[in-house]
Amino acid sequence: MARIVKLPEERRQELVQAARELFMEKGYEKTSVNDIIQRLNVAKGTFYHYFKTKDEIADAVIQAEIESSIPALKKIAAKNDIDAVEKMTAVIQLITEAVTVHYKDGLMAYLHHAHNSSLHLKMKLLLLRSYTPFVSEIVQQGVKEGVFHSEHPEQISEFLMAGLHFMLDPSFFPRSGETARATIEALPEIYEKLLGAAKHTFAHVRTSFQAMYE
Image (tube, rainbow, N blue to C red; front, side):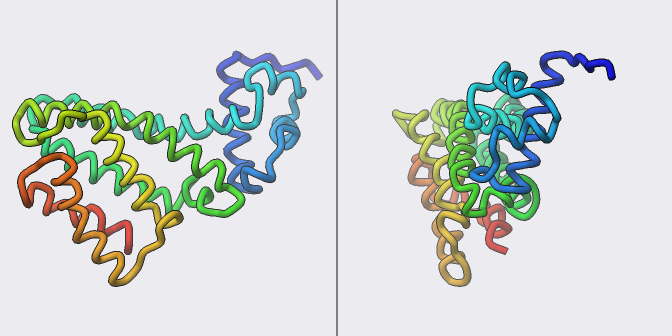
C-alpha cells in the first residue's frame, strides 16, 4: 500500500484531534504518547516532529478549544457603537454562557473528572492569558469614558477573569442553594468595586450568572 503523504498542518491537526478524543475517553493522565500514535497508526517520530511532549500537545488541544471563542470576544472589544459598560456586560454574558454549555457538554465536562485535573488547570491558565488583553482593552475604554476608575486596568482585568474562571467554577468551588444565591447577589457589587463603577452599574448581570447554578 502506498504511503499517504499529508500536509504538515493537516497531520498536526490530526494529532491534536486524536489527543482530544483520547483525553475525553481515557482521561489526560491515562493517555500516553503511544496511545495517540496508535490511534492514527503513525510512527513515533511523526508525533515528535510536531510535539516534544504530551504536555505540549495538551496545550495545543486546549488552545484550539479557546481559539473557537476568541472571535466573539474580539468582536465585542472592537465595537465602536457601544460603551465600556455594555461591552463588559456582553463579555460577562458570553463567558458565563460558554462556561455553562461547556460544563454540560464538550471538553470542559470531561475536565471536571479527577483524572483530568492537570488538563483542567492548564485550560484555566491559558484562558486567562488569552482573554485578559481583550478585557483590559474594555477596562481602559471605561476609564477614558469616566465610568470605570482604575490605575491598573490590566491587573484588574486579570482579577475579573480569574474570578470568572476559578471562583465561579463548580469543580473548584461547588455552590448550591443559599450559597449559590448569595454568590449571585454579591457578584454585581464585586464587579462595581473592582472597576470603580457606580453602584448598580452591573446589577442586571445577575441573570447571566444564574444559569451557571441551574
